[in-house]
Length: 434
Image 1 (cartoon, rainbow, N blue to C red):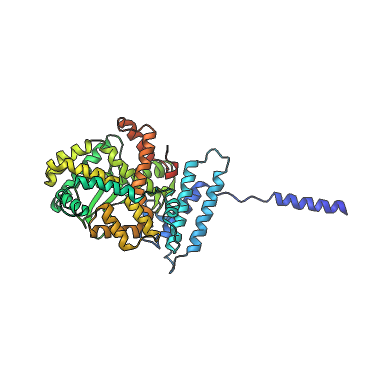
Image 2 (spheres, rainbow, N blue to C red; image 1 turned 90 degrees about the vertical axis):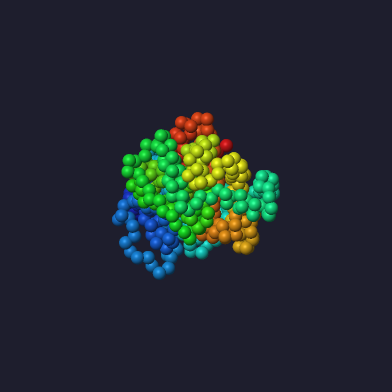
């Protein structure tokens, strides 16, 4: 009888061990489920999905429910994150580690932003880490006050510094009737230089529109198949320096080019379908905004920008080129102040600064008019820690390219490293650092 019992037990254990194991989803299956999840969440927030150029059948067919199904979305994101973790510990050498890591970080951001839509609040630094995989630096008021001293000595005259600054800058406003001409010349030049280094699709193109009542200055809506809609906000006067800024940032080699390279190299060539959807509040945005701002310096390095603006854009806008040198001195110092908005956003969003004082702080350190400062605070309220992507993103991208040999005196290498960055899965933490 004992022997029979042991035989039965042995058979039972053998049968258990022979049960088929659960099949781990492939990275492509995880990617598809991620895209479908992002598109579903996007039904509940108008700006959650910035671009989509994947299969039409992956779009949600069922109408959204009355309330955000937060638990469902978070659970699905967590499950996909777990599946990415399982792939990362796999011994299969065919797995693309950078791809899986990027997808995992995108999923963490999607989960975080969904929780925020549902009412969860993170500190500024927590949010920056979870959404953008970044750790924004901290600056004291003393740092910015010292920079203001330099501007104060440069902008002599009557009134306080913001008044003197805005009076000085009024001389460099592009007249509205000349705006389109100036912008198109700047865009054409940015495109011409970019095409010397990048092979762009023959059909690539964009539509340029001028809009009002926005919290941003410019925006690129990528439509897929190398097509974009670029909008320029004309709520406030546009200075001559913004022509190249926006032409390069929104167009060449900025957002328009970045999204084309993502679509061509990752989606079409490699079949990495997770890149066919762009959730705005995610690590992709730090690379997108950072590379777009850094791209201005790549396409117009050193004095080449100043020379082009003096020779072409100043005359087209009817602005006295003899005043250009002091204008560039002022712009240089203003560029060093751009982290001040991050500090204002951190204090305001963490509850350490009232809305009224946030506006005053932006007036002081960005030298904005009251109306422009109010717009800036509205941008912070709408996009929160997204502000770090412009300055921190640029600095991280610049350091990465430089450390890989892409210095200003080696333009060929600079463009090569820059293109590699735009064509592959990078986040803040995977960029090369000192």
